[in-house]
Length: 315
Image 1 (cartoon, rainbow, N blue to C red):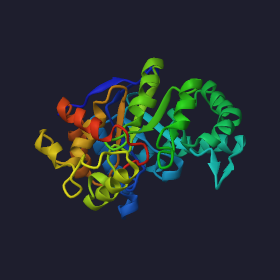
Image 2: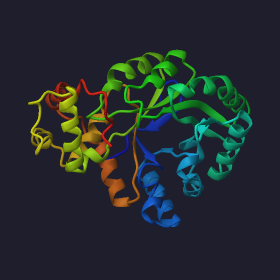
Image 3: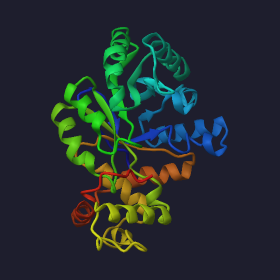
């Protein structure tokens, strides 16, 4: 299958619909014992497959790997995104330290310009510090040509209903947002994506595939909790075989494939991130994300079952 590309909101960038995430549980394989050269090969394989969007972060420890992997590729054809936390150990990062962190990211990545720079995993209670003290730092970096577009990623591990992003989108300070979205938590469809589409704000989708889609026991635990909270109906699913019907009613071969396709074709999502430390797994994920939408009947049923869910993210 051939990679597909699309306009990245109002940024003027053109991006692959598949983005390589350099964090997550694997961190390009670094978390599972891969050596650096193996991780570099994985990034280069993604580029060979047509992926031109790479998302990393200071906190992941993978910026140098990304920098080594992209060294021989046409820089103008790539979109490199990275991130830095606005708070450290519960305390706000001072503006001068944040600026130094951006310079360090540029050096580790081996680039003169970062295409998309995120405030990493931001929370609503951090927003005042971000806007008052740190946004001016990024604006100066933009003027100096060191950053192209300001962005913010939410802390979807706790902000299941996107409070931070709703405020950020309202204020319209950022050209790009990273939003959590998947089959189990579809709140972004109501609370984020209509507004980003209206304003031309580009979107990166994270959490498309989490443990619930590959660990049946974890999915069962989540569904039990959702029944107790009333977020799904008691008779909505068989707890011991809850989602096999998706494979029976579509051409998807696996639940993770279906989960990727669910997000990939959601109106308003520009790039779906996928992270792995295994090249074969990478190839499978890219193939999944390039497949057609799930049947409308499947989408409608998933929406009916999980449309009220707001308290989980699938992890």
